Length: 94
Length: 297
Image (cartoon, rainbow over the protein chains, first blue to last red):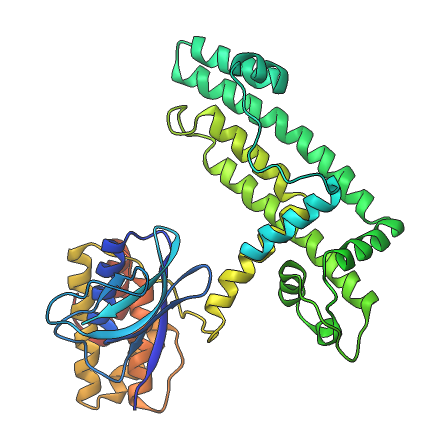
């Protein structure tokens, strides 16, 4: 049974730093299963019932509903996140 | 945002009568004269800044201009807000709202301020059964005043955050734009536009209201390595069913002892994650838990 826990990420983070934070948090808490925002910061939801993943998730912005998904990766979840304080559509891939 | 802009436009049209819509701002070929006529103090400040021989002097001139204007804007705003509380203005406001298509209310009479404002900014129309205009207008009006105050604070904070920047990073034209934004934030159209923008963000987040447990920070690689070390230690203790050890760690962290071992493990992992943002805080955590772990991390 999943144990989702949600933590925040500063809205000012650049994409590269947001992805570094995702990797660091997955390594500590478990795999990312949800992304979003509360209007003030990005929200990252992890499943603490699972062990930390071997491959970390990567957040990718979408444009007109399309995203460049890294080769060999699949979409994990989607939502609106802050990147350098701008709210944008994104997906998380793994 | 779109609906807010539209509403602001409608208000502008109402106030300006029904003359043909001008689609572009006026322009000029004589910018110097236009600027002198438009804002002589700003022009004078520009001349002084370009003549100043040090960065500090340039900043001082800019900041003096900002400070003078903010004092005047604040004073005028106080007068404006005080005038809004007069009884007759409330009635005019109600008429204005009705005129721009805000025929809402009903369930909104018991709605929160943001819903109320969304209704205002979205130009929500349509009658509903239990219709209480007076409650609606009173609450919408109060919410708009609150929004003006909040908007002004936000712009003032932005100006203050740029206060110490050099003239290259925060030129006078940008300061002037911020000051214009400060004036607009303290206006009814400004409050409506701002509310529409807020409502848009809230709509995007409203699908599921989730509160973050804490805001995580990116840490240096060496700190992360240490965090992973202590994290794995706790995970191993949990796998070994060592409830006594987890209880001891929980006690040292001042978090509740939870009967369920995995729940307690998760609480510990989250709390340790929350506490450590650099080597100093990692040292503190390692030291704090040493009696229980008998290890340095």
